Length: 64
Image (cartoon, rainbow, N blue to C red; front, side, top):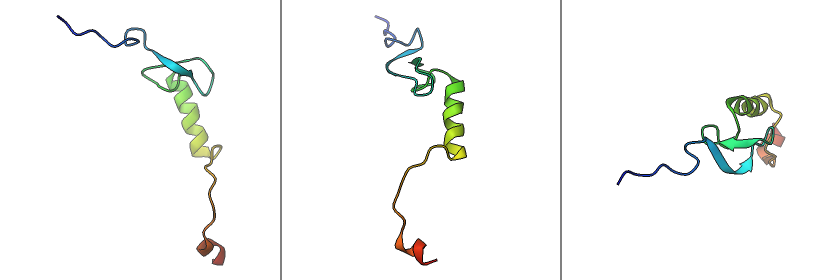
């Protein structure tokens, strides 16, 4: 008996959350995004500093 492909493998669609950039359904190949374009947009936002993870300053940084 041949193995069955996982559900969604044929269509390329991922079940779950929509693309965080445009809201379209995510694809398995670009998960959690819908396309390579949205992946690149997100990467550019991280690299340009549009996204930032807040943190506390160390006391050592204040002394310098």
